[in-house]
Length: 482
Image (cartoon, rainbow, N blue to C red):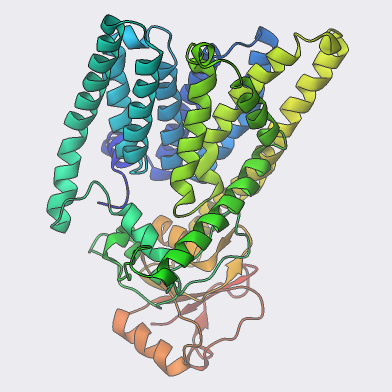
């Protein structure tokens, strides 16, 4: 699949072979990833100059952040964990002299690419940029030669491991591609995008994805739950910012919109985010010779800037920047360490107060999100059991179009269809007539129609059909079409 990275599927294989329930398997994977992420964050904290008390505060902050990340999207969560370990390697003082570390960085970079295609360009840019910094900061031809060898080693390992998957993806779609995600995401944000923003733009937007405006769509293959299994095959109009002045203006507006979105997200993580970043920038105001000796200052800034910039070109969501949030958290620990060296914070009470405020600023959002999202995931899974056991819902499913707080009707029904081992044909398009909707039901042999939301209009041809839940599920009616 060119759109979804294969790593999570590969990790699931042993669980499937032992016939472990998929819902349980994902929870186990998330728990293991969370533990590894916390260990990695603690290890990474030793690359920053901080005290034990501040390090403990960072771990306290990290726990709800890690739990929140695990609930939003498992693939993004695994990517965050991998990048934490990658950055651990790149910030080691002995990195430039040990080729084995460069090889390990290449392995982690390839795994990150298998997890999510965004890691492919990020690794190439970050790994290259880091080695350029190390090259400039090295003294003598021997030291520079070692840096060049480590760069070649890491890139060679990354290329060797990634090549097999790139060949598979390219062969499947008939042209060279390391992924189809970027192309499709770009098309979805084009000037002719027909979708619309959701009611909460910080948590996700519906732009030009056909699944949200084109009406019912057949799953992409016999075993797929929906057309979303491989969005590569969705019919989308490609565009280029350089093809016309109108397209370039649209692209510029898109970037400004994403910058604004990114600012909101980073501020949502912690009200101290931009103060920490600004303080780190001030730390760079020193002679160049001294600055080149401080990779612990330059590389974190370079990392968060590069990682954020890539998403600014297309689209921003909360889950995309969690890695940046963790790096900023560690940067904040270093700023606290430097503040505590000043006379103003010589008082233990002032230090404890500042650490307390630091922790609170980073945990408010993830704690709220965990409570909200945790209930959402649990409620949907419980609802799927009820629909399967009490109402025997299965087969081909369609739904109306409705926004529902945490998610919309498409996302809800899509997840329920997976748990019900059914096929979801998507949501009815806006302003569709009853006769047109009936034609689509007959075309795709729809068995059940989910109507989300209160006081929704019931199509006339369904009014004589059975509403299988008999009003027992608030905000949802399910009609047995045939």
